[in-house]
Every structure is written in structure tokens, then in C-alpha cells.
Length: 166
Image 1 (cartoon, rainbow, N blue to C red):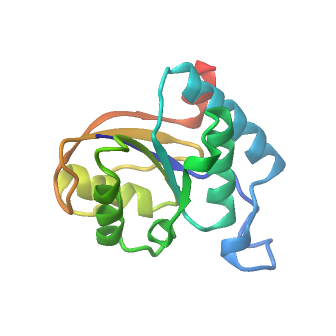
Image 2 (image 1 turned 120 degrees about the horizontal axis):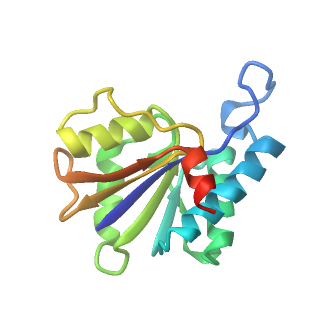
Image 3 (image 1 turned 120 degrees about the vertical axis):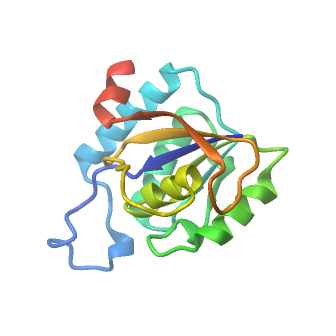
């Protein structure tokens, strides 16, 4: 299985946004950069079977931009397990339920959730050591996903590197 972790694009500043954190939008610059990032992802020759995204607006919008580039709108699935305080064990069960018909999945979410998920899958514990910048992405290769060490890191790219590929 190929599991891609993509952090949402640049969003409105939390300190300047009057609404709920879950409602923060991507900035116009964040949307523009995500379109270029999606173009870079496409230039890598990648393909995806499904996109799972946090229900937060900035993550859903990021997933929508990627899905549009790959004409996958109907394959985007919103899951509360990718919200900032989502349950990683439940997420792993959701991913396992997709196995077989979905062997290449993108997870769109937030920090530090995505990096601690990656470290748990890579090292067996949710520790620091990997950081995804806004719009950054990594690829994990997994034979059988489970809670604990089960993955190998194939690559980790910054937004600048992804844009440069376009």
C-alpha cells in the first residue's frame, strides 16, 4: 500500500480569525500554492485510489484542489479521524477497510497529527522527528497497516520541492 500524507495549504491566521478553528479557510495565496503543488504531484506521475480528509474546511479545500487535478472528486471521503484530535487507531481501521480496492491513498490533515501518525507507523511510537510544512507531503510504503511500526518512508517533500516539479 502507498500512503501519502499531505498537510493542508496555508490558511487564515488562527489569531486573526473570529470563527471556529474548523471553519478557517485557505488564503488566496494558499489556494494558489496548493494548485501548483497539485500540479507538481501530478508531474510525479502519481495516481490515487482515494482521498481521505479532515472535516476542517482548510483540509477539505486542499483535498478538493488535489481531487480536481486528478479528476477524483467522487473519491474524496471526509473522516473525523483526521481532525486535529482524531483517533489514529480508528483511522487505521478505516484504511484497512479500504484495502484491496484502494491501494494508493492520500490523507489530508493537520500538524502535529500527521507527523505523529507517520512516526507511529515508522518507529512504533508517536514522537517528534518529522514535520510536514503546509502543503508538504510524504510517501509511506506499507505491507499491512497497523497501529505500530509497519511502514517505510519513501520520500518527504516540501511545498517548494513539489512546486518545482510542476
